[in-house]
Image (cartoon, rainbow over all chains, first blue to last red; front, side, top):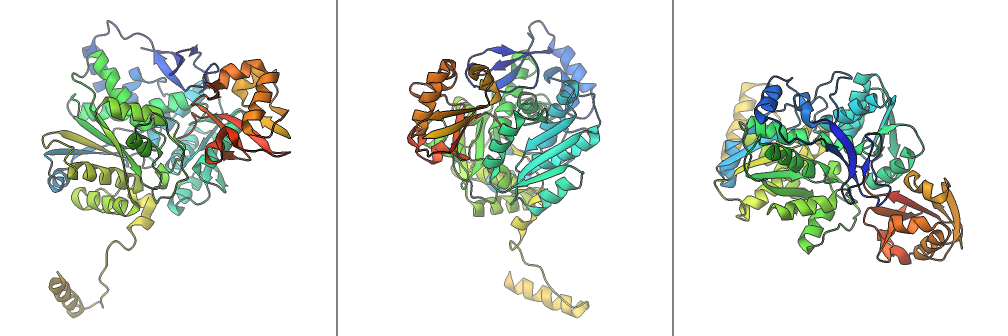
Length: 410
Length: 90
């Protein structure tokens, strides 16, 4: 099932498999189209997957590149059965896909792996991106592993952890005085003038395919079964829609039986153009100026917004938003029930999961998977002030006094 | 009002390769109309039902016109209007 063309999602015009992302006829987004899978034996594919490496490359049959260029393998992250979280939410079966367990601690390692592998095949020597932080980490690291030059553009007010964890790889780090949408506009302009592989602009059709591997892993880790519901964050909407595409491809091939899960999207109230459009019954997003602690989701002008809306409606899901306080509580809820410390985006996802459970929208017997996309150490500020530590003298008496006080307080 | 319009690479075949085009108009809508008059093919690429196709973004001085007054957004002499594909990023 080799990739066949880049095809416009709107008007279906085909283009060669080079570095392009926009249909020249209607300006619609291009997506990788594969050759026919008719007559392919699912058992053969399944064996090939199971014999593959413990990384996204075990799914090479479903990707636009085989990724032989360099070694910094992404994916094959844990899917954890979160029984204590489930109990607290009044549900029977909740799983957490912990994508913080990637080389640069977010799902962006998946998409960047595909974009850079394809960029190498196309002969590029410089990689670039517009990032809200996690992508910056991943592009800088993977470009270093591949021995390529890189330019990483970020909003100047990003979390310090994300800036430090990008610069360390020796990239050209460009801090832009503006928000992510300004950075994205700038990079879209620059991508026309420089012969660089911008992973989420001119390489976007390949890059986006990387998120399908989340669906593949979830299904394989559930013993080749589908979940009933996916709760995942929405920034541009690419991850959200590509998880569905991944499940869809495997259903079509016969590797999975059943229907697409319900898709619930999660946004921060301070940047919720897709949730607002969902609530208003619109099929397009009105852009917003982001104002939220969930900076990795702070895209006010989401490229795949219309497709995310369509997916949530088609599968009987929804798109919800949560406040900054709910996000902090979401981070704490996940941490104290699963031992997983997630960044703000994971707080958004967990808080929306809680909201859905409290609204009674999730049937108790459903198998729910929450997609946790990044690591808590990247947004440490959000943990500050959410707990108190004891301060004591280095004596047993001092400790016993503090302990007695805490028992009384409790 | 003379305004310069930046043309994205994907549309340059329709402008004979021009990356920046000077046109007249007092609003974004008028500027685009002047542009379509000069390069007829551009209209079919980016315009739809009297507005813009949904995957086209237009900026005045770097600000998305949806935060301003859309196609009615006024433009002044020397302003820079930028047309870009909307499907980037994320």
